[in-house]
Image (tube, rainbow, N blue to C red; front, top):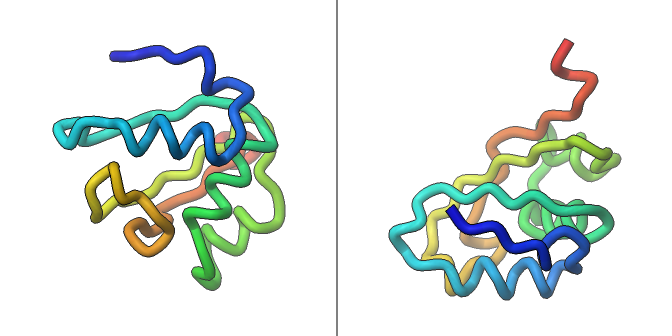
Length: 95
């Protein structure tokens, strides 16, 4: 486990820089940060997907939200074309 306090307030490019540096053996990654950077990254990675979780994500990325992506490319080439949004959960969904 690696904790990078610099991610908390990072913008999209800062978060992507860290993700691009990950070793390929990092199968699962949890990024905890703050808006607007984290929400903008999620929107960027979701790309132009229609309906379902992507539509909800585009409306708002509130505090405590979790966007789950499946990544099919090496971390160093992470782009919207290499991921798909699997789920988007906001705190009110957890009742």
